[in-house]
Length: 403
Image 1: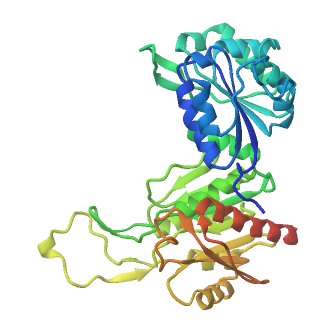
Image 2: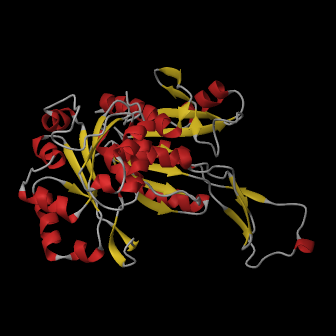
Image 3: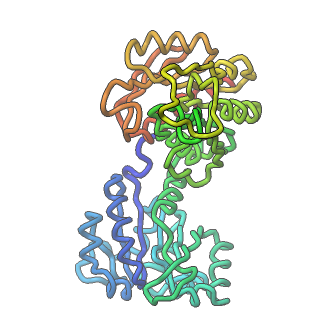
């Protein structure tokens, strides 16, 4: 069962001498909040930008600053740090540290630790854009990739030196997601997963539409969790303000009929379909080309029914395909969930209680009632990302049975 992917993991963060070192303090703090065990190794020049005490306070662990530091409890730290690490992150990685690693030089604690480890190493370059684009630096980065190191390309923008270009430290969200993918089980490797998310908008005129309260957060969490676990994920999303998770293919739609067409176009190629979107049941019978003036708006709105996407998927379900539905309910969760589970030929249905303040629409947490052929189970109240992993655990079991 997947829990918080960072909890209990031993992560070594190597900090080299760059003004961007102050940003990494926030990274350390975030990983510590995620319950990771973070150990920071600093080069001598890094300590000129940020004090070791800062990283010690944020990580809750001693900071290593040299091979022969006074009072160091472990005289073989360069071996034990690399041996015990689940992964190593070097950020910011200067041109100097990149050159050393490319040449196999081990003349300080950080470079020695990296050479001694068999853990995955992620490098985040950060330097002046001219230094980054220099042929020597580019050659060294190519050499590191050939040696098995992973490189996250730097961001582009204005730097402390007032110049603009490539060389800024990458954004933490992307780096964190890369770490999460490394630490997650790859039990969905190669599985094609389609997820729908968000609301639909059914237009009345160019200024008005019918919609619902769905934020898309649960669907996006499912896409993110599946991608972390190795799946090839297609996310079909209604309108929202969320950022597509790294590695996920995003297809944006507006209306229920657009979602119907998109889902059915890709359904046959999907091993797992998770319908987490809150699709409008009805649309206006008449859509006006121009905005209707308020004095001309009638008191009656004639609606016509949208196609039931989940029902159609159930009718077309292939042998071995897993179909997961979602139901947003405020009463009779079990009864409504079981009815939809049976009537729509599902393998599993996740029932959201939308009557509370901490579950359902627009919030960061959820508590799902899962119904399958083997019975019903109430999952714990937790974050939507963790709920997604718990749901995917059940999907993985179903995949194993069908295969």
